[in-house]
Length: 158
Image (cartoon, rainbow, N blue to C red; front, top):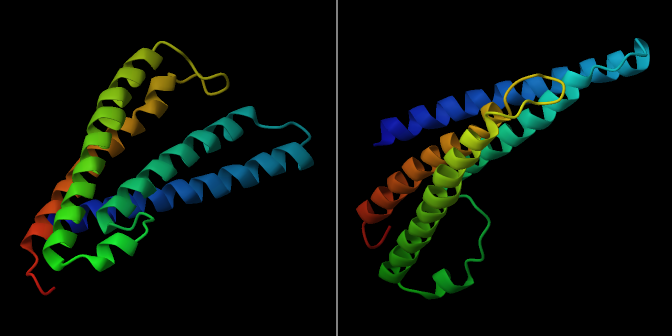
């Protein structure tokens, strides 16, 4: 299980890094074409906005794997270790349900719907860019399962 988590982490980190590098380069290109060439590149601005959405969702999947989402630990700190574990499993199940319904099911639906619509400057089906929703949804599902296995495998004092 830990090997799967590490492989997913490495792949997502590589994709997020490549996406960030591409956004920086495309933004520099946009500035160059706009202010130096006086002929702005419309496709680069559009692609950066889609890459930003992809990066954000990949980051959400990574944070899910680290159990690093923002939280207020006031209640869990006051509970015993068994109750903390149960609360942790419950929160993972909520994340699992959200990902299954909104990201995977909803993402597949909107991706299919948007395949007939083309982007304005890139000329690519919008559904291609929406495909990140179900992809990251499946990654979040996998991470939540791994998190639950890890939580349930912990000893009471750990």
